[in-house]
Amino acid sequence: MPHPTVIALDLETTGLDPGDDRVVEIGAIAFDGEELERFESLVRPGRPMGAGATRINGIRDADLVHAPPAVDVLPGFLAFLDRHPGSPLIAHNATFDAGFLGMELARANLPAPGLLVLDTLALARRALPTLQSHRLDALVTHFAIPTRRRHRAIDDAEILRRLWGLLGGSDWAESDHVAYPIRDGSRPASPPVGWESLEEAARSRRPIRMSYAGGTRGDAPRLVTPIRFANRGGIAYLVAVCHLTGGEKSFRIDRIRNYEVLDRPEESPWPACSSA
Image (cartoon, rainbow, N blue to C red):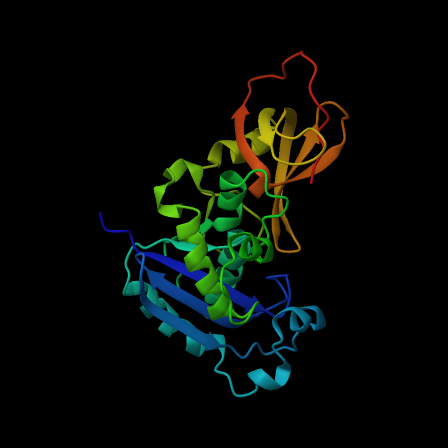
């Protein structure tokens, strides 16, 4: 049975804030079990590299002086996507890449493709619940994935291509994936695709019962009332009021295993709303 085509995507940026920072490198690999095509390009950001970003990816301002700007790179990238119509993208911490890509497209007055970006971070948490860390570096070590360079776009895209197969990504049901649309990440945060009932619960202040992989209580259910979604440091969060303490807490979206919207709070005791 043929494998569906998937596109592994990684972006390197000047920092973590789509409102102020810019993309400096795009790497993407289309594959259906075997590599079909790849796209890679440096991007001149029009602003200095952040010191923290350079420490991670090693890209310096001098490396970008002669790179084309995003407005010249993005049409070629969109053409690359068009050659694999309807193929979902995958990224590790997908809200980051989906938001930065959407921001650059908006700045260039180019339309965002109607493609989903599936989150391999959330998938790894679901597939390997006992693993202490699900960061890409930890997964590289866990699976002994061969690497050439780390934290460069095309090399991390190659890691994602291999990781997708190791996690059995195409074998999981659509409902098991956490996915984000390509959207302008400098605008207010939004929930993953298919989580509209959670967004409505936040608007109407209806409580939810959720299973959350984090904090001191493991997967024990928590009773909270959602308030809003937020992106901080490149991570997507649900901000909610804990019914046990009455305090506001932040819960990482990739750690929410499932949730149920309630008509009213139940009166039984609930575990502590530890966030992480």
